[in-house]
Amino acid sequence: MLADKVSGTSAGLWLLVPEHLRLGTWDLLCGWTGQPADTVGPRLALQLVHEAALCVTGVRQGRTLGQTGFELANGLPFIASDLAIHELLDAHTVQQAQELQVALGLIRRARGHFTGKLLAIDPHRLKSYSQRRMRLHPLAAQEDRPSKCAQTFFALDPDSHQPVCVTTGTSARTARQATPELLALAERILRPTPQPGQKILVLADCEHFTRELLDQFARHKAFDLLVPMPNQPYFKKQFQALSQTAFAPQWAGLALAQQPLPGAGDSPPLSQWIQRTGEQAAQYQYKGFVTTTTLDGPDPLITDFPKRWHVEEFFHDHQELGWRKAGTHNLNIRYGRMTLALLAQAALHQLRQRLGEPAVHWQASHLAKSLLAGMDGDIRVHHDTIVVTFYNAPLARELRPHYENLPAQLEAEGIKPEIPWLYNFKLDFRFK
Image (cartoon, rainbow, N blue to C red; front, side):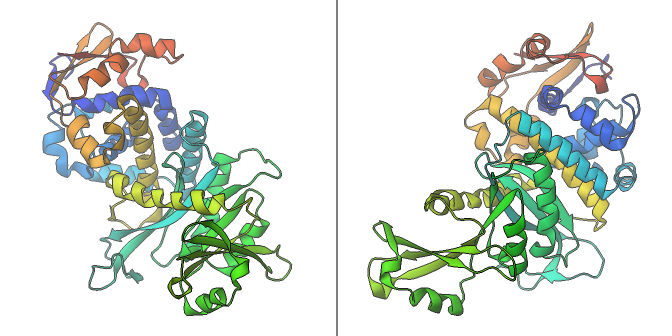
């Protein structure tokens, strides 16, 4: 196929190949599949990564993808069937997917994708099309009745807006039950070596406001929790009963009060913050927060906690990579697919950083449609190098400095330019 040359609109997918080399994707996939580089397993896994990057699922797109060079980027002469992909995912356990997440997270941390000073956790419920009997959830306010869902729980670095890890579970699993497992993964990524006295502040929502979680965080060696209290009449009466002198004005319309809360049993004490908005007593509104640490001033509450909203922005912009809906409810298969989508997101993040504005803020589906699967190009072989030529490419001015003379650029970064899954061919790009 390379000797005959290939033309199509999926040539933009090849822009991810150098990002895979920088990220070490091939070694991660070989480790996850447990197969050597000259076998088909890692290439099937790479197809899943590229499907996620293109925001497509399965071979329903096969008639078009198979005619534009999609399979060549995976080192295959064919597109794997749904059955082959199912068998690949089903052959691996939940623990293997978690180990892949940890390995990927350590690489991303070393490359500076996230700092790990703050952590935001949030559940994300995917509509499920499984035929199993399961607990139903009201997925959205506009839905008439609850639906089947797949529970997913994300940990995100709110400063860089990048995901750290993800877990999933049955539809009956609660945030309280899932949080310890999620934090165990995050701790292995962000704190592989213990650092006494330095904890990461975890930003959560009201769903995590339970006595059990607060007690667990109070004893945790790596994390502290900052969680809002539910907007219930019982708490409102407590806040309204506080004296006016307990509140310290921050600026017009905002005042904060802090008071200790006793822990349960032998648990360390907690700290409660009350936020009061409004200038007149008749218009006061209150919002309570509980934390397992003594905050050094109000800055974490005023400047850090609003960053938790970046989790919702992440779901909005990147859920098409594989976190919008769920078919199967086999958890090992869901873990594998979602973890490979994390690999796609990491490679896309590196590509976005090279493109700059405005592509850095594009939604995943927009980037896939406009760039990865939206550029006319051809793929051919010249000696030991695969040459991808783009014709009148969008963002060519941004792409050219990073991708022309690519082998020399990779060698300058200390990265071997030979591509293992493409039988050690090198890769270069032309813009015409």
